[in-house]
Amino acid sequence: MAVIEAALARTGLAKEALGVIATPVTKGGEPGIAGAATALGVPLVLIAQTDLEAAAGRTATSSERVIALTGVPSVAEAAALAAGGAAARLVAPRVAVGPATCALADTGAAS
Image (cartoon, rainbow, N blue to C red; front, side):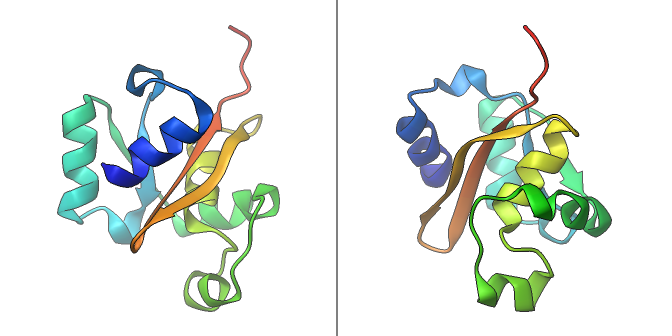
């Protein structure tokens, strides 16, 4: 929750602005991620590796270490963008709090 709150604070968005929490399939069993989704009352969306890779070109930040481990420049950003769809854009690049990262994306759909 701390990293989500930090990302929201950076953008000035309220928790109610969140529609989903997206994470790679490989992290879907992590209790902190599932707990955050439950606490916020939003669905937990598991993103396949192929979808992370498809969104990788739209990320704003890059880590050589993360590329070596996951094949994408920023897991948080790629997951947020993949969950948001083809027109999604980053609202905030990844924020780190300890080992956890969070990025926020907007679907790009007209309101």
